Amino acid sequence: MIKYKLSRNDSVLVSTMPNGEKMMLDIDQGKYFALNGIGSLIWDELTEPRTVNELVEIFTARSDADRNTVESDINEFIEQMKTKKLLLAAE
Image 1 (cartoon, rainbow, N blue to C red):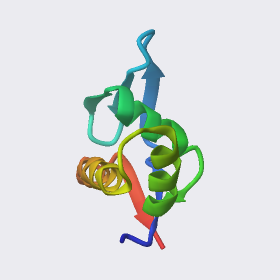
Image 2 (tube, rainbow, N blue to C red; image 1 turned 45 degrees about the vertical axis):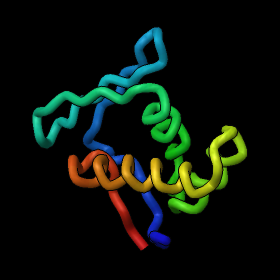
Image 3 (cartoon, rainbow, N blue to C red; image 1 turned 120 degrees about the horizontal axis):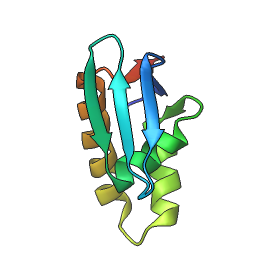
């Protein structure tokens, strides 16, 4: 399991739409991104740095899905967000 803490990239401006989705603008890259429901919920949980395990615990408690499914989905989301430089990882 990934041990580092994840945090939001401060150069990303975020606006929450009425349907709960997030529209994001990365100022450094000059690119827009959108987060759907679960992505928005994960983003909301990152108001402070958290480990993947902390996120998995939070979302396993909130859903009917098994822990392995939640962990796999969160890891996939995090890797995409790190690749786009919307999330940062630090030890």
